[in-house]
Image (cartoon, rainbow, N blue to C red; front, side, top):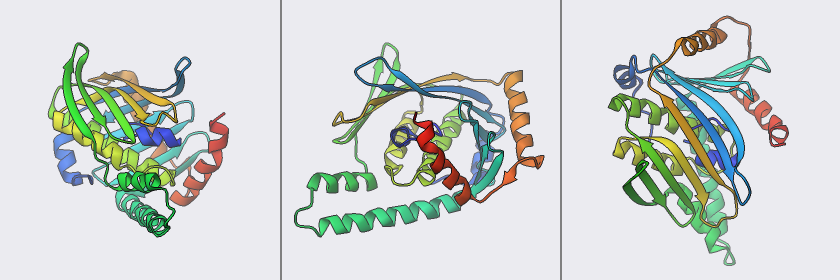
Length: 281
């Protein structure tokens, strides 16, 4: 799903990556375009949260949020992400091994917290269950055919997904889409530590992969109803037009032309976290 920067969007967003060589064999020349709009759905009218454009081209994924000027380029054949702030003119790169390392630290930190809570005789068991669910999310799954198309429903004590799916021209399109969805939710977590582990979104991607579908509408909600529901609408075009190809050319040049300041991943993350209060306004 998307590169959003807020806690509940991370819960919505998107197993380990297959070998890069396998991806390049299966995904070569599978070019398509996805436009995504995220909404917060409460008692009043839905509120638009974010729009993004995602282009799949030549084995890479280009994910751009116009309102934030943020671009993410995923190159699975080299096992890395490039993160670019077009407004701050900054660039950083991070390898998937580093993402896995940071996820491992986050899991250990959360496990340590769990042990401290469990050692307290007055511990809130609901909190314990929520943390355990993060490590091993279990959903009741149902795949049904509706008048709008195939639907995948995942329900649990804490989170629910209701997903309207679509078939694709080839299985390779499913692989490319869901492989990126897996990795962008992992990346979002390490960019914004302290939220919910990405495993619940990975469970949804696994269910879609099993059904050989990609999502065109995703409804996510907390079972308790304490937070707004989130709806993601995806419009997919199974080919790129001339404008898309020009964007890819421009975005590739950002990595190579030397006009951006290269920073460490940690520095990029710090700047991102510092900017979040302003983004929420």
